[in-house]
Length: 215
Image 1 (cartoon, rainbow, N blue to C red):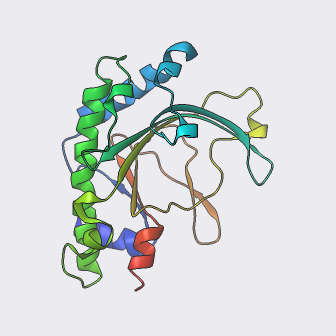
Image 2 (cartoon, one colour):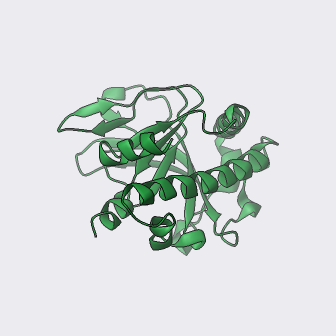
């Protein structure tokens, strides 16, 4: 595992995590819970809506807006703050489907442990003490976010885009794909499609670690 993570970090800054844990059942539960939520009528999803005007970013939102390139970005999402432990607002988490809260919480704990493992490996790969990168990124009190994205089927797909080209300001990003292609990375000078691997978690090294690793 250490060698594979180090190679991903020094090359693409991007990799696929497979068979690190026995998580196939959990991954399937998280996917099903998310899909079941987004399949509900808009009136039901609106009960969990965020209130960005008041600064409450947690909850459901539907985004439909033109980006800087003039393309239409269209996505529905549910935004969670899941760590530190005092951040989650579970009162607005969906009650339907019934497994949503339990599956999301269990997956959050898995990601928290996985983040520590990956940061430890990257630290050792850089010749640092094992916990250095995690400490510099905020330690156990670092903010851990979870976003469930859903991209509605567009009748004119040539006019719409899920998310425009961007970098992640985070330390690490973990992506749970639903086997629908579309995710791409820019390397080296070209857009390359990310492979869809069953029961996998895609890891991306964000801007924070890139900056810290150069200091």
